Length: 240
Image (tube, rainbow, N blue to C red; front, side):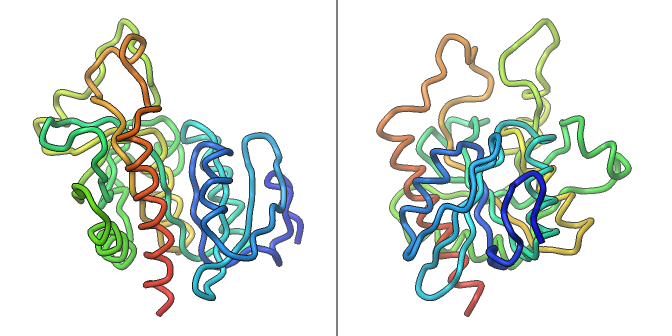
């Protein structure tokens, strides 16, 4: 079956997928695998397949924001993917979890516009516990700080005249904010598959990102490498 938006054949996909925003990060993730093939590059969706320790893994980019990412998640699931892990970056809510740290998302606050069109507002966006466990164990085997907890998914990146909801979620104990995880978790729940996410912190959420945002530092690059390694190792753990 040909997936119309990803432009790949479902027969070429594996049951495990790593998803990320950036098409070039997808290429970087795929470069860590053996026997890699690039299947398609359609819009923001770039798809690779490869394997690690004999476990077949699909890698796909989904772009920025929940609506476009949701298209990717839905088509992967339609194509037979049963476990999805998002690898990405996020803004920290606390100096105790500085840039360069990793956060495994156990659940996500639904501060985006997509999922309210899919499920009631009271429906939670929660990761699969087995995926969380495998991600946290694998990330803890790398060097550097690793935390697990609640993340926030938000549509807006740069500030406008409306206030961001950062302060209330920081006080409530959320660890970080990004733009796609809640969509992943809700769709996974709706379609009966497993999902989890790990993010590398690349700055502080309450900063003026137009002035200070710089994800291209050595400390962030190192954290991205660690999370990629953790995601691949987590999939191997889940397959055992």
